[in-house]
Amino acid sequence: MKFTAKQISEILKGQVEGDPEASIHTVSRIEEATEGALSFLANPRYTQFIYSTGASIVIVNEDFKPEKEIQPTLIRVPDAYSGLAKVLEAYDQMKKNRKGISGKAHVSEQATIGKDVYIGEFVVIEDNVIIGDRVKIYPNTYIGNNSHIGDGTTIYSGVRIYSDTRIGKSCTLHSGIVLGSDGFGFAPQQNNNYKKVSQIGNVMLEDNVEIGANTTIDRATLGSTIIRKGAKLDNLIQIAHNVEIGENTVIAAQVGISGSTKIGRNCMIGGQVGITGHLKIADEVKIGAQSGISSNILQQGRIVLGSPAFDISKYKKSYVHFRNLEKLVERIEQLEKKLSDKG
Image (cartoon, rainbow, N blue to C red; front, side, top):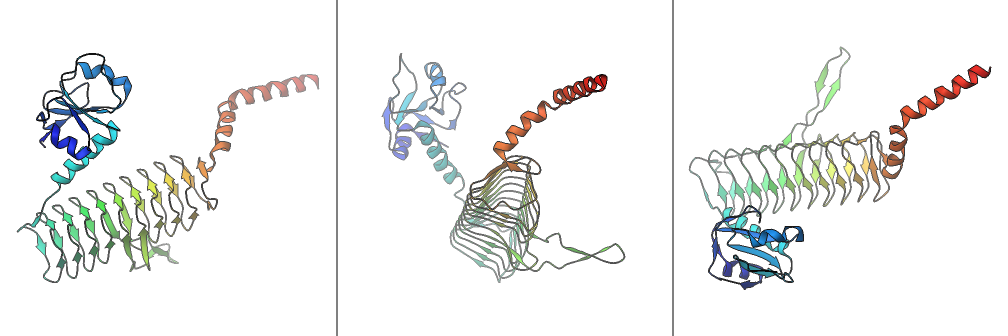
């Protein structure tokens, strides 16, 4: 990465104060930055560092007023933090601007490949796969028969996409994801063993879905396991067969969702939550970390915590009593002793 202050100001539509040809090749925190680094000042608590930083360029808010001389070139913008995010996004897009198909990849002759695609080394793309325009598939990825990948989607190395999977536009799949492995379907038999139930459905991701590393999403027994548009899933999540995740719902790491549960739109689910099967979770529900959900949540916007989970306000009140439980027991024992002595 190499940008001048002038180039950065053009990206941000900001105002340069200092040398417009000052250049940077890295990004650092303001208190740690050295020459050639870009930094930013958004939090007033860090103002002291702008007078000693070694950064070549610092993005600051428009209303920043220095109290003494400053060495780095400044770029003034309405919001310094948002400005930095925009620069990083531009750099990220440049870094990911790969094209071409590696000679070490295996692409079936029956596959359809779009324009401006990148396919890395040791990628396997099987029969009747459709890859949209501007898709990027990093090395050691497998895409099974009859799968569809929408325009602008990025699939990082080591992803496994089983047959018949449908992935929308502008999705991001991080390393180690498995989409479409068999759902956990086994029918108990009379002799105490289990017969596998064939899982013949698929997985479907709508547009703008992002899924973190090592998350697994099982194919449906029948029909589809569905992740609706805009949903964001963290690392190390297990989504079982026939689950449906609503639009723009966000789910933190180590959550497990059992089969056929339907989760609404705009929900927020904290880390290590467990949700049993065949439930319905309403829109805009918030579930605190490590909660256990064993019954439907049908009220929109409800906030729950605990295992089994219940309303967060009641949980907090109950927790106060729980912490005082030892004292309450002692008081009861003392009262019982007094009653016994009187008797």
